[in-house]
Image (spheres, rainbow, N blue to C red):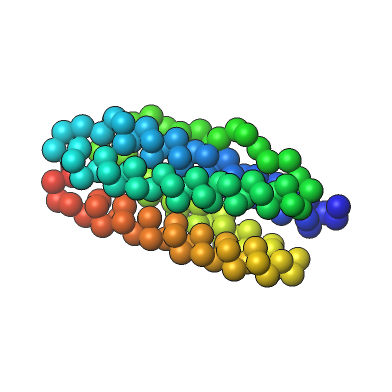
Length: 144
């Protein structure tokens, strides 16, 4: 395995850990959100979970296909209970994910992995939508 492929696999494993973390984060937030935002944010967070699970499965399969070993360790999740902090943490995580996937897309392109490039672009689109949803929710003036 050449160095560029090894570097891609390492990056994909970092991304996979991030997707596991997102599943945990959204599950935790859905189960701990309280107060007047409960009825809106619980289903909102729950809705994000399947997307992140699909991303994780895709990444895990690609890592295996490329000759790597998928990680089983998620990135750390900060436990917060304040609604605004939940949304800020989720937004920041989505932004970091987008940045990582942009790097991964470039690596895949350099290796001529067209299917991976196209799928990463789709995932970047999904994550961008998630981030924009968080940003809109954070504009609520009642969140102080």
